[in-house]
Image (cartoon, rainbow, N blue to C red):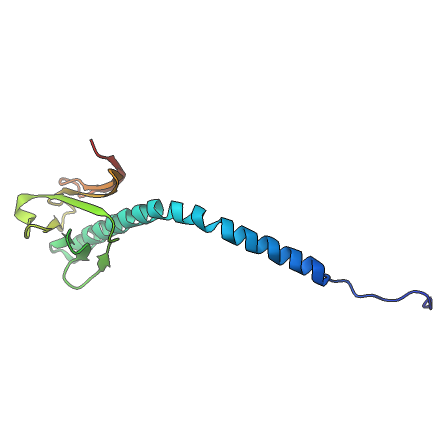
Length: 156
């Protein structure tokens, strides 16, 4: 039985509580973007290095599977790379400094070069440096095994 003096009030938030929560959320959103933008350049640099590493590994895998030479071609000026003729293409950040060290036979021009992988897994070898403000990453390819490795890099 119901007590006539008791009113059943549904639980919920008051308008004042909702306004306070929205004000706090707005304050947090105005403070955090500078924190994210400070971290983004480093994240973008590492992501670009990982993209290059993945492209090189894909070229090696395709060479082994197809039984023919596959080249990973980098255009330093256009900031693009290609894996083989019909496979993967990629674009790298405009504000990155790129440097390609490749075999002389794989230099395709002043700003273009390649790392070629062979069906046995070996390669012509090389190193690609991706940097910003004298720091960054180097992605290297061992010529004998074709192994692709990434490491931190700093200008001397």
